[in-house]
Length: 288
Image (cartoon, rainbow, N blue to C red; front, top):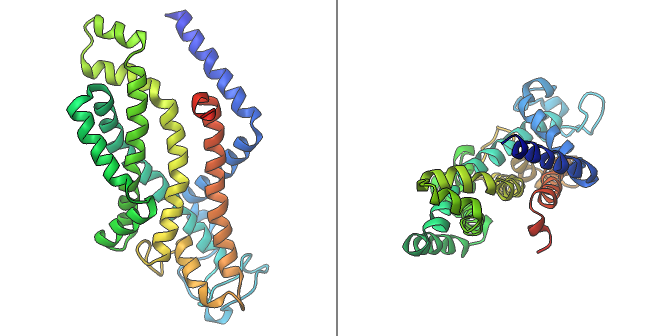
């Protein structure tokens, strides 16, 4: 047992060193960490109340008083970007958690038991995958009603099929390996085999999927808020800011530039981190 633990620790250290050598992945990880910290510390980071208008400073250009300028109501753009990043991170994390809570058990059951269970889950997954991710999210949000909570639920449900497919594929691969067969031969029940032997060894692929799902959720939240199906004004959201900037692109381009850059930076950061994790944790996927 000691040798096994030492081997696992050595393998983990090797993966961490390989990840550190990937400059793009580390850059993405640092930017993602900054976004997460900003989201957590938004009340301390934002210099102004993001919803408080100041008509005397409406459409003020970026300067010392307002580093990113103000919008048509005089609200500080930096404060609104900070709180918009908070909404994006909230949706990104919670939507992925929802997708995993529902998708991982279904993928485990489909891959392990096969036959009827696999057929039912696969048909359900195929039906949901018939709709593009954003189209399905918009449709669900329209049915549930406009709010940040409903947008999170809609995006989480839309990501469930991808989680099911990844979990099912990993379960199909792992259920035939020697240590799973040994566990079954030693009298291990289905629950023990699934949650002690298969699921822990599928975490690498699922971790990569999570880092891919978060930027997709961030884009989904921005789109839903842009269409009026997510965060509702006067609350701050990157999508709401982009929607409000449409009429002021010529006189105040900063109203669109800075929230747009925030969306690009957040999605790019998590995608770079996800690519690096895929190369380190799931080398089979990196060569597909």
